[in-house]
Length: 351
View (cartoon, rainbow, N blue to C red):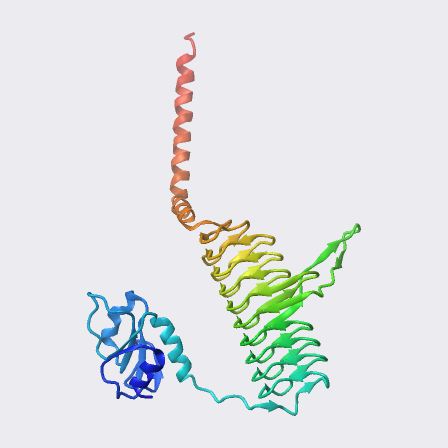
């Protein structure tokens, strides 16, 4: 692809030779002639001078930027332009449309036009798969489940019975959507009786769900992932949880039952959220945070139990000084004891 064409398709302003051929997208250090690279973070701008790329996607110019050694594609959102460029140059043959003879599809299941159903796929009674959906090998779609248009379900995905998935949803390998919520009632003899988990799970449009993630169904009500949310690998979303629009959940996040996560929330890796709490719109939690109560909108929290980030950072400074503080306290206690002993001696009448 000519650089001028790439610039037009990305909506970037071209600075340099538009006749250069671009064959792939590469990182700053790995790029070679014929590659386009990118810089979105200003702290990496100095590394651009050593790149061998034929072009670079950059943000708006600033007065202290060193000159680029290659052609430049200017964008107000360079990281977004990079994402679109990667998509343009992504390799891989498109899946074959049609139904593989080794699949097992219930007679009353509905398969949309131009869908691709791979080998060893099982689709239950009354289920439906939308137009242009791609279902990779060994996917199981339960009875009555509904899969929207242009969805992609990768190998080994399990969509349990009755689950509703919107349009343009991607589910990566091994994820389980609609698994039983963890619900048990303790009986008088100490044993536990299972609470049947048969209510709804709804995944709205444009959601991505990472590999080996589990999203549980509740006994009553619904578990819902709203439109545009992106979920990383190995995430656990319990029964009755509501995740808002455009939320970002990193790997190994765990959210307990009946919690509400509002729009635009970002949870870092291994964040744990207790049940029956609300995380306000636009709130963020840094990695390994333990959220045990409600979080206000727009707040960044850290630590366990979670605190506003600024407070948590202050506590961590104190934690590092605890050994010295312990030693000083011990020394002061010893001095106080010695002074009290001397004071007692002074008060004792002479014999």
